[in-house]
Structure formats: C-alpha cells, structure tokens
Length: 366
Ligand SMILES: Nc1ncnc2c1ncn2[C@@H]1O[C@H](COP(=O)(O)OP(=O)(O)OP(=O)(O)O)[C@@H](O)[C@H]1O
Ligand SMILES: [Mg+2]
Image (cartoon, rainbow, N blue to C red; front, side, top):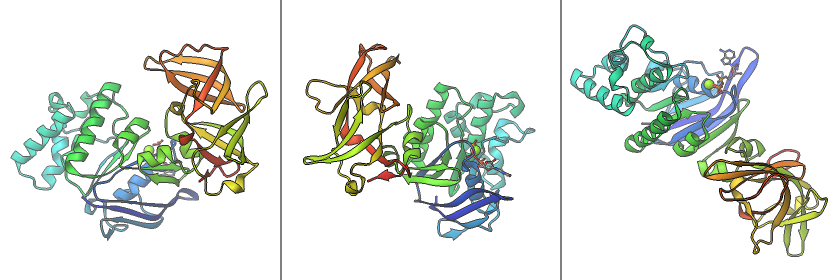
C-alpha cells in the first residue's frame, strides 16, 4: 500500500484542456472518492494514475516515487475500468487467476484467493463460464474479482458497481468497506452514487470541468462546502439555495428576506462569520439542507412562513416543497406531517447548519 500525490496534474487532448492543475494528496490507507458531473475528467485522472494516458503536465507520485514515465505494469496498480474489459476466451476463474499466474502465485494459493473473492462477490456459481455468458452486472463483479485478488500499492475503481441492482449494490458497498478496513488498502474510486461516496470515502474530491472544487472528508464536503457547486452537487435532494440580505443589527447578524405575502422576515445567524462586516447590507446566497428544516414549534423564534407547493411522502419522511425568496425550497419533514398543497407552512431552520455564499462569485463566506 502507498500514498498518492498529484501535483498540478494537467491533461490536454489536442486543444482541449480536460484537467487543469489537479492537486490531491492522500495517505497510505486512504479511500479517495472522485465525484463530479459526467465529462469532468474523473476517468482521465484514473487513467493517468494507472499510466494508460500520458501526463501533459505536473507529477504523479506513488509513495515517494515519481511515476510519470513508468509503464503501467511497473506501477503496481490494480484497476477496474468503467468498461470492464474481460478476456473473452477465458472462463471467469481464468480471468481472475490470470494476473496471479503472471506473478507466479502458486496454484493452491491462487485457488484460495479465487474462492475468497468469488464468495465475497457472489460469483462462485459462475466460475466456469465465459464472459459472453454473463450479464453486465456479473461481468462487472468478475472485473472486481480480478483486481481484488491482488495486493497492489493502489486500487483504482471506475464506477465498479454501476451495473448492479440496488440490493447487490448495497451488499457490494458493504463488502468493499469491509475489505478496505481489513486490508487498509489505498483506493481511488469513482462513483455517481452519493451514498457510496459518503459511506466509503475517507476523502472526497469534487471536480467540475477539470478543476478540483474541494478535497475533504465526507463531513467537510457535506457540511462545509467550499462553493455553491459543491453544496448543491453533494446530497440528494440538493441543498436549498435562496437569496437574502445580510444585515447587522445591534444584537448580531440577520438574514432578511421577503415571504410570499411580501412581509419581511428575519433569521438570526448563529454561526460566526469572520468577514460578515464586508457583506453588511449585501445580497448573499443562503444554503440549507432539507434535513435542517422542520415544522416550527411554539419555541422557535427563527421561523419563516412559506406556501406549500407539493407534498411528497416517501414512507420514512415527507418532502415538502415550498417557495422562498423566489426559489424552491425542499424540507425533509416527519412522515406524519399533515401539510398539504396550498397550506402555509411555518418552518424553523437549524441556523447552526446554514451556510452563506457570495452572490457573485458563489464562493463560501466564512
Ligand atoms: N481520447 C480522448 N480524446 C479527446 N477527448 C477525450 C478523450 N478522452 C476523454 N476525452 C474528453 O475528456 C473529458 C473528460 O472525460 P472523462 O472520461 O475523464 O470524464 P468522466 O468524468 O469520467 O465522465 P463520466 O462520468 O461520464 O464517466 C470529456 O469531455 C471527454 O470527452
Ligand atoms: Mg468516467
């Protein structure tokens, strides 16, 4: 196992800049999850770490070693591709065993390793089949098996669970987490699944258009987003975002906004802001997660009344869509909530979790 350091890593395909100066450092044993919209450069970054795409600028270091010029086979990496290429003429068992054979692992040890991963991946019954006789999800698990029998310096996984059904996906997620805890492996993992990102990662890197937006623990990225993009990209449903004016009053800072009846309402800030004076009297963007809004009780001073547009019961919770400051605001309320469309909801915000952004730059105001 090894640490991984990317220093100002760049990639251009012809004239197109695909990665713009990526700086990421992870420790030995970290589980780095890369997230970002389709086309932002996640697979390209994995390919460069693996040595399958050359590096247009910057350095990739595995452990203490700069690997820019090393051949993929010399980097000691195991990769599961987004399009999991298997050897078509080999059985599942041979596919998994191939890398082990190449490394001269004795037959008995190979059998034990194959039995171990095929149990974990629930593919024992498929070992004698050829890839063409498998479903997409089964092939994907064979590709995982091929990587997991090895003990490389770094595992690279590109959306390894994307073709599995919901149940199997949850099972595999747990297995990967268990494996990581047991081996302490260094892993770089790409996913579009928010729950996978939050539950597996020790660090999350959020990318957009080839630019790293934020690198931090799941908690940091979720609760302390660096900008509006990160705030709204992480979490489902997304963080609510609406405009308000920041005002200094004698007893502290307030957010002022108009409700749908045109009345001014105020919410008192509880998180200290170091540069709040600069924003006094200015419009800011207010971010609050659906789970940080609840129906106001008598004791709630910071409350806002909003007209209810849509009520969506999900069983465990009820999502209530209201509007505020001209924007849609979703609250995750208790399942037994009795609000209906057309009602006016009295909502209380958990002001300790409210985050503010500059209305022009969309960067976080701290
Ligand atoms: N060989 C190539 N030549 C030119 N452009 C490429 C090449 N490979 C990738 N790209 C472009 O680079 C950008 C990043 O692609 P990449 O595959 O890394 O995205 P991604 O983040 O993995 O997306 P997805 O989530 O859809 O898998 C895309 O705009 C893509 O079109
Ligand atoms: Mg990709």
